[in-house]
Amino acid sequence: MRALQHELVIIGGGPAGLSAALEARRLGVRDILIVERDRSLGGILQQCIHNGFGLHLFGEELTGGEYAQRFIDQLENEGIAIMTDTMVMALESGMVSALNCSLGVMEIQAGAVILAMGCRERTRGAINIPGTRPAGVLTAGAAQRLINIEGLLPGKRAVILGSGDIGLIMARRLTLEGAIVEAVAELMPWSNGLARNIAQCLIDYDIPLRLSHTVTNIHGSKRLEGVTLAMVDEKYRPVPGSEQFIPCDLLLLSVGLIPENELSRQLGVSIDPVTGGPVVDQHLHTSVDGVFACGNAVHVHDLVDFVTLESRRAAAGAARWLKCHPPRHSVAVSTGEKISYVVPQFLSLPAEGDITFLFRVKKPLNNARFSLSAGGKELLHRMRPVALPAEMVEMKVPADLIPAENLLLECRGEER
Amino acid sequence: MSKTMTCIVCPMGCPITVAQGDVCGHRCARGKEWALKETTNPVRMLTTTVALEDGELGLLPVRTETPVPKGMLLDCLNHTRSLRVKAPVKVGQIICSDLAGTGVRLRAARSIGHS
Image (tube, rainbow over all chains, first blue to last red):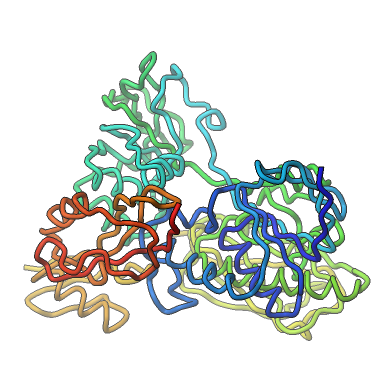
C-alpha cells in the first residue's frame, strides 16, 4: 500500500475535472492530481463523436473529442499529474483511496478534493419495463461507447425509448453504421431533445417518432426478439388496445441521467434529493469542508460550456480553501413551485463578485419571469420569452445585492 | 410552394419557411443562408470513426471539415470504411483530402498516441 500526498486531488478526468485542473493551476495551485478510471482522459466526451460542443466558449461547433482535446493539450504543459486506469474506491475527510494495476492500492492525502465523476444512465430496472431479460437491452450511452470506442455494433434492428438528445443522436449513429431504427418512442407528448436533432437525426433518415408511447413489454429468451409499444394517456398509463409488437434485436434506453455520487454518499456529503448531486454553495463547496464538486456529478448539464464555467468556479473555491479557511455562514436558496431545483442550494457569506445561479423549470413556459427575493422583497428579476425544462437557465446576480437572509427563487409564466 | 424546416446551424433550431425564394422565421443571417441552401443543395456534416492501427485505442473519431452534399452521405461513409490510419494521430490531422469526390477533407477529431 502506497502513501501519497497531493494538494488538490480531482476525481474524474472528463470536461469537469479537466477544466477544474487547468483553472486551479492558473490560480496558483502547485500540486494537482487527476484520477481517472478510464484508460484515457476526456470522460464522456470521448464517445461523443458528433459536433455541437463549445459554441459558447469557443464560438465553434466542435465534436466532443475536439472539445476535450483543447483542455488535454493544455494539461501537458502544466505539469499536472494524471493517473488513468485508476479507480477511487473510498473517500474520507482529507484522504482518497484509489487503486490501479501498476501502483496497487494507494492512500492519497489531499488538502482539497474536487468531485467530478459525471453521471450514469437510468436503467431498465429503474423504470421497471415488464418482460423477459434477454441480451440486447442497453442504455443509449452504453451502445454509444460500444460503437464509438470499442468498434462493436450491438444490434441490427433497434427501437429507442426516449427522445432526448442522446436517444436522437444514437438513432442517427445506428443508421449510419447500417442498423435499422424502427422507431423512437417518447413517453411525453413532446420531445425534450433539440428541434435540430429531431431534424438531423430522425427526419433526415425517415425514423418515426412516436410521442406519448412507451415500451410495455420485452420479448425474447436469450436474445431480444421484439418489444411491445403502446400509446399512453395523459396520466402516462398505457391505453388498452393500442399495443403493437415491433420486432427488433436491440432496445436502447435513453430515459434519464443520474449524477454519480457513490463516493459522495460514502463520505457523508449532503445530497439534494431533486438533483441527486451534492448540495453546494456558490463556490461549489459541499457540506464537507475541503470537498468541492462540479459538472454532471452536481446536476446534469445540457451544455459542456456550462460544465467548464462551473468547474472553474469549483477550482477557484478549492484554490481559496487551500490558502485559508474562511468561516462558512450560510443562507439557503429555495425554489418556488415552478422551478425544479437550483444550484447553488446555499450561499456562503460574505459573497463577492457575481453569483451564478443555475436552475430548471418544471414545465415548458411562455413569458417566464424569474425572481430572486429575500424576506419577501424582490432583489432582481429576469425575463425569458420561452423556458423549457430541457434548457438550464443561468442567472448571474451581483453579490452586493444579496442580504444575509435566506433566498427564494421563483418563476411566473404561462404553461405552453 | 413553400417548405418549412428546422434550421440545424445552431442549437436554437429556428423553424424557417422558404417560399418562392423568400425566407422567414430565421433569427440570424446564417439561418437564412442555410435555408436557401437547404432547398437547392442540402448539405450535412459527417462525423464517424475510422480504424486506427497501432494506437492506444482502436478507433479514431473523424469529422468532415465542411458539410458534404446530403445525397452523398452514404458514399462518404463507405469511403471512410476503407480508410486505415496509423497512430500516432493529432487532432486536426487530415485523414483524407477528398472524401468520395466531394472535395471535402476529413480530419482527426482527437489525438491518439502509439500503443
